[in-house]
Image 1 (cartoon, rainbow, N blue to C red):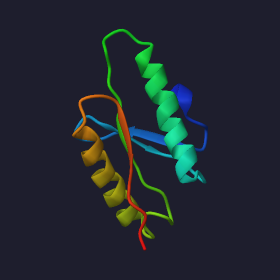
Image 2 (cartoon, helix red, strand yellow; image 1 turned 90 degrees about the horizontal axis):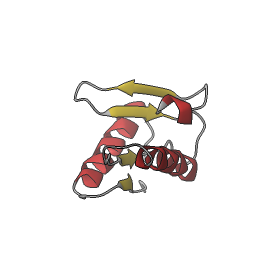
Image 3 (cartoon, rainbow, N blue to C red; image 1 turned 180 degrees about the vertical axis):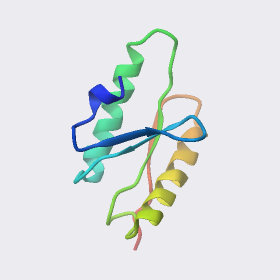
Image 4 (cartoon, helix red, strand yellow; image 1 turned 120 degrees about the horizontal axis):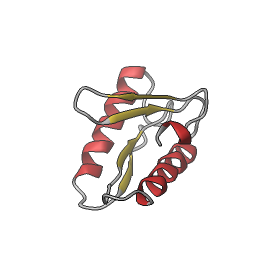
Length: 95
């Protein structure tokens, strides 16, 4: 299901903690949010009451290095996990 929502140039991986990480190549913030929303809608059609929580961070608006982009996405994801329902949280823009 996740892979059906990705383009050939995108990357998806299951992380050590059981969550999934997705990386969208050449995708601005609104495109990344829309991709997460497509995945959320796809999950909503499946039985089992799955909930999607996502953290979105993009280069260069949220961070300038790969490590900092991941850190920003992780922080946004942590905020999204505080909600009991579906939530797509976008990292704050760096000055």
